[in-house]
Length: 257
Image (tube, rainbow, N blue to C red):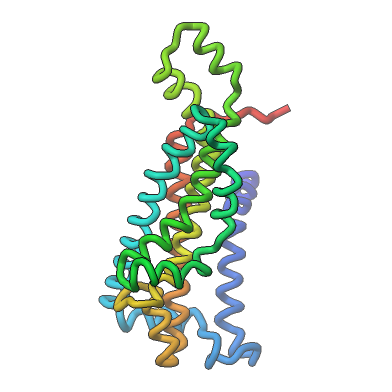
């Protein structure tokens, strides 16, 4: 019984820390540690969100839709390209890699003026902001994963008469899966980070617009509502990717000694 309680406490440790943070956050104004004019308490944030549930759902659905479109477009580009560069065209990868690395270091924030210049302030510019933010980590990690597949496994499969399709499905894809999912996770985090900035220009809906509008009207609790919702969405999406990864990658390395 005691061992079960110890195991439960270990699993709940993160939840205990989160609960403690909320309690301290809520009580801080009582002890004059913070000014609620600038830092809203959890109760104030919940109250602000409860007053506009319909509007919030519209802003959430708009932002999620924009994130998913840009994110999945980046996946459809980066994953096949990563397999080609990492496995089939290594010389092309060596030639293009310095250029791609340079592009990957350019933050989408700095490209805002160019996106607006070429695509305007409508949906297309927001799409490319998300797309640019997501494509590079997914491409780099996919290429790395394919390159790091053990060549001996490929040679062994060929020696047993396996065709290219079988080698790809049973050797390369499983071997590159973990780095690919790592890239997908980083890409998703960047997408939810950039959607706030993307929606602050030329938007009439979305969580970024909601935060910017709340700031302009000095409604501080609503600023926190938008920020908290973005954080929750990013957290949930990250866990969804992890769940899919665990479902796809059924094998585990045994690291016990």
